[in-house]
Image (cartoon, rainbow over all chains, first blue to last red; front, side):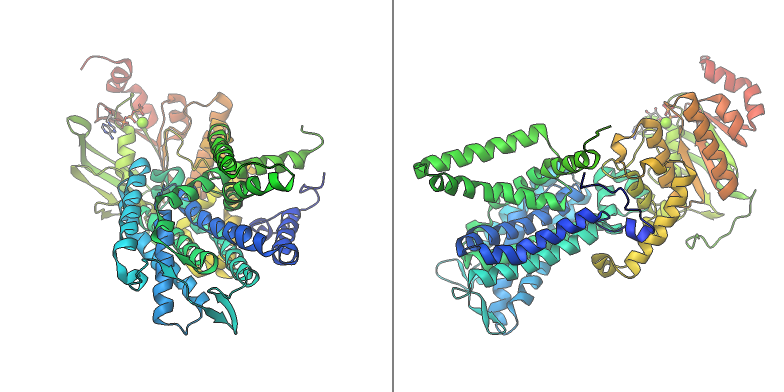
Length: 358
Length: 266
Ligand SMILES: Nc1ncnc2c1ncn2[C@@H]1O[C@H](COP(=O)(O)OP(=O)(O)OP(=O)(O)O)[C@@H](O)[C@H]1O
Ligand SMILES: [Mg+2]
């Protein structure tokens, strides 16, 4: 009833080529932004900000990165964790060499380091596809994980082998390091994630996005309309790794405050891959859904029962978490391989024709 | 339009000529010593029994396969070994025997993708989807809408092509090829698997493309009725050899062609 295009006639192709042609969608985006920028900071305590919202946003960004590569361009990667790591270590090196440059500049720049590494490991994608490419990216993952442990230069020879995030300020307000409040860090992360999501959405809805999807759907036909495969694939690797790199830098600098190499191991890669699969391959919105389901649901499962008065042993909760999330992954893979994003679009379609489905 | 092709070929002149082309896959000789030409503005049919080498011929023309022998002249110039994307830039478009659409994309996006080579706005404008990037998007959308109207597929423009019936998929694929505004359009069995009505529609589109836009067309088709109606000249392949070349009426009367189709022993 309320979600439909009736009466909204596009009078120009510019309006119809807009990313959100429907008024309701634009209102929806506005509401989400208002909730994120106003409601959550006003009502959320530091637990909600620190333990839920900040990591949720960071993982959403990494999922967008992987989704660009896997969902939009059809190249499977198991190296997401490593590409995030490259971003984190690059940011660490940059800010320790040049402590006076604003940390946000370095967070963004670390994406370029990750992009360069991504392109390098993307080179085999011209010749190999699917399962074999996944194995090649897995090799990248192990090689880079090894570097994070074995190259002391990367962590400035700290005896602990870990990165410790120094204090950095922005107009005098601490935004990284132990003194930065969750509220400040939340706003920084939120702004970066919103801006980068907007840019990604612009990219995938334009010529470059169509080129990626063409390569994904039918590479010979893509070549035939003049798309050069290698540059297009490498470009997807670059943009994807850029997003993963920034997300890795945010993870360490604005969430953990420090990190060991294990943070960027292959488990991290699978974690992000699950988010992308459950959320929906080839959907930016799905990346957020996936991150919410995989990251936030376990937290809710952990804290909801005690709030409701159930006293459950914490080991039990761990088991239940694994069980529920594992089951969800399997159910999704079997019943709805296109992920939550597809359910969302079906729901919207139903709403559009409601109450007369014919 | 075709900035890539400074050489202008007048209507009726030779646009493409195939000279003594041979192609083998291991022991299988797909094409043996084939020569023929395609003139600007004509509809040239390529016919022959199954496995005759018709699809292989198109694959050679647009750079998917590289012949072991022979040469190809396009617009009067010998063509170096080229990749399909270079052939596309040179003005050769193509549809496939088995529909090769981008299944995850809408009909509109498929046809928009056909405009890729004509779009040039740089990455930073693309990131912002503003200024030149957005202007370009609108200009090409307008062009694509003309093609959509022409092919009468306005109602399904936003439908993911994977959900369309086969006949419409073939039409969208033709739309994508037309979006490239090609010099030479290669159609590999555009009417295979269609019912009579769909065939008539498709025939009409092919004739209109040829007449209205002056596009040169190479057409592979099994239905002799269609070939007779549409084509100006026909080349007949059998077991990788050219067995006849001429107007449809000549071809219909040719004894070798009749034998090939009836399966007379060699
Ligand atoms: N990539 C390939 N590798 C090996 N053999 C091939 C290849 N492509 C084609 N052939 C062989 O070349 C010969 C010609 O095939 P082609 O597909 O060109 O025939 P066609 O005339 O298009 O037939 P149809 O009417 O069935 O489409 C066949 O014997 C086929 O098996
Ligand atoms: Mg064939």
